[in-house]
Image 1 (cartoon, one colour):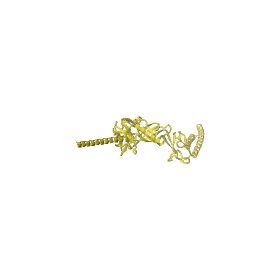
Image 2 (cartoon, one colour):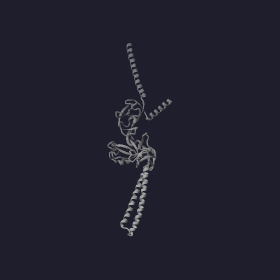
Image 3 (cartoon, one colour):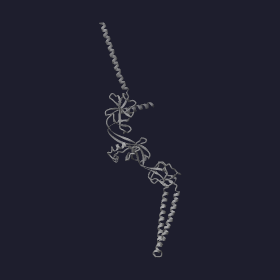
Image 4 (tube, rainbow, N blue to C red):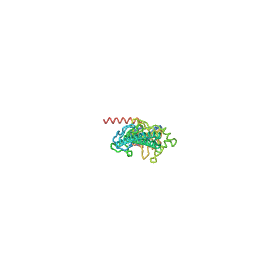
Amino acid sequence: MNKFNALCSAKIAAASALIALSSCSGGDNANQQMMMQQAAPQIATITLDYTNSDLSSTYPATIKGKTDVEIRPQVTGFITNVLVDEGQHVVKGQPLFKLDNVQFQAAVDNALAAVNVARTAVETAKLTAHNKKMLFEKNIISEYENQLAQNDLAMAQSQLAQAQSQLVNAQKNLSYTVVTAPSSGVIGTIPNREGTLASPSMAQALTTVSDNGDVYAYISLTEKDMLQLTENGKYTLNEKIKKMPEVTLRLSDGSIYPEPGKVSTVSGIIDNNTGSASVRVLFKNPNGLLRSGSTGQILMPVRLDSVIVIPQKATTELQDIRYAYVVNDSNVVTSVPITISPINDGKNFVVTSGLKPGQRIAVEGVGTKVRNGSVIQPVDPAQAAAAQQQAAQQQAAAGK
């Protein structure tokens, strides 16, 4: 009986030890899971839903003045004076350059002298014709002599008219020695200075006057863009232009030009070399901020209804495939391939397939803390931003 009790006691002790060991192992797993959850990074997530999107299509633009007039002399002569400077605003008729006018002034003097001679000849011919007429009426001279006198008067008057025409031409050439602005605007570069021989046939203009009161921004639309614009021929270009909303100009430094623009014309011809058509957008330029030759980007608004919009930073791209990172109920991340609309504002993507409403996606740490299969602690984006700001402040304080 003692042996039996001893055997039973040994079995009970072994079972107790096994139970204790099993309990200990289960506790370790729970602890490990708890530690994994605590070690998982806090990542901002959002829940997807349909929304309306006001995005913009971006097109590189070249800016030109409403009128860009090349200034060329109409007579040949050496430049004696440059009366303006580059970038200066001028008004219509303002003198810009002076050319050597000695020979042109001499031509005016000669033409004026010729006019005086011709005028004197006319006065003499008038007297002769008058006297001949009186003698003819008294039958003292023949009709032939009288007619010769009348013909001499007509010839003298023609010579006077020719001399006066030459005088006008000489005076006009003299006036051309002062080159004036054909319109108000801003002076461009001035490559030719005093002492340079200027002529109407010179390869390089004296300068350019750009009327920058209004400016045009030129962009290019592809054939596909043109079809989308007209909705595959449903509307004409003129009809769509009238309905197009105002556009925005992003300057080369990234800032937004304060004045809105309006699409004024779309070329009806597609260039065979570039496969695109030219579009002209008109902008007011009251302060002269925009200059001819500047560059920028035209932002055309595009309205999309009932779409899924996600931040661009919530995606990665690998071998031309873009991925978003869906978070399941266990807070495990799964990478999902998605397709997006080519239209974006530089910050957000419109998802056309791969995601659906109700799903959660990670919107930060993608590619670093967030990978396929990783475990995260989802937090609200506002909370994540506040935590990052607090951490930055603490780091800055520690640095001091």
